[in-house]
Length: 170
Image (cartoon, rainbow, N blue to C red; front, top):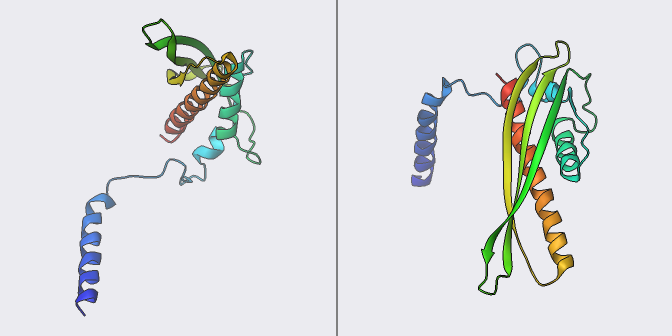
């Protein structure tokens, strides 16, 4: 009996706690809007510019996976152009001058172009900084650097996708 009362009291408390949030206007970013459009459909209509560098290709492929998954292709209404810059620097240097920790930074400047007008409707810059260990094996160091580039590309693509989604949800 006491257990039922406790559950009922908890349900009432939770219901009352939710009342202030009922009028806050929160809506999920990818929800279908009243007019039938959705952010996901709009994102699927973005063409992502080809890239010449390996990090650029990784960012492009990650963006395509996020904004236009298989089966959601839409007519292209926008084009996303971006350029990137990379840098590596030493984080930790031992007394014998051996570097045992590195940091890789990938910075991407992007611009969203409306294909019907040719106007830039959104631009920005984002970056990712990831670190990796250096060891005596040069092959292991090359692989660690390659892994850092891949992780940074995925993080940058996530940042851009979130910013595009926020832009189109307004």
